[in-house]
Image (cartoon, rainbow, N blue to C red; front, side, top):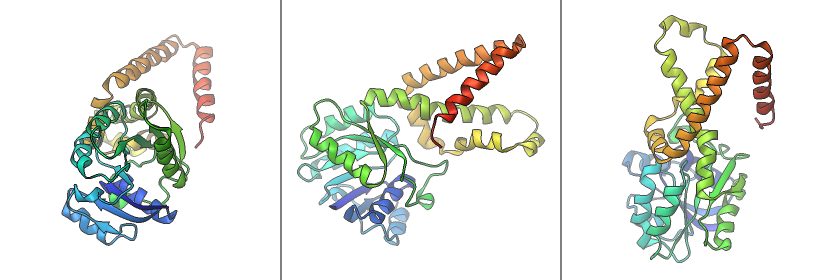
Length: 283
């Protein structure tokens, strides 16, 4: 059990982490910081939160682990702000959906600090954002990718990995670069596709929405996600996401040709291949 952890940014993921930490008895105390006073006031009423701190510098004092749960574009700045106030050998991690830039800048900002930065990305979430949607089982059974830069002591990597494992997550270790390529295809592209479909259908007669079925709703559910969170993710992982989009364009051109030619065998093979692939992925 850790003596104290700090959660900076108690939104959907931050608050869910706090709840799960308490549920699994991983830390004796959870300290939290947020930009908005209303959020801090709400945290004071939560059972998972032991200490509320309005001062970001003070928010990391006394903590062995600091978890930054803010939008990806703000994470390096926050690391820089807390750097001088970290405890000896405390670990700073994050929950950002992009890793290369964050890990490089995070490590640079802590080079003269007592702390160590190791990136993390818990692959858990919802189409909704904010503390109101946090749950103590949001993380359980989900994957978490830990992304240490080369040269980081394995001892510290294991501490971060063990933390996520203690929350009943399945931990994977990728380099930041491999992480960003993988999530471009398995996270960022699906969100973009859902949004593209909604943008396309919005142009058609409004009454058509009345006949939408579960297939449409399942396919577009994640398009509800907060655009302010997703916009910097798309920018920070631009190169990998563009590659994924171009691969998708090739696949769409292929199936378009099969349909145009009314090639029954190719259409069946294409759909069957997609079906078999989906069956191999856990629900």
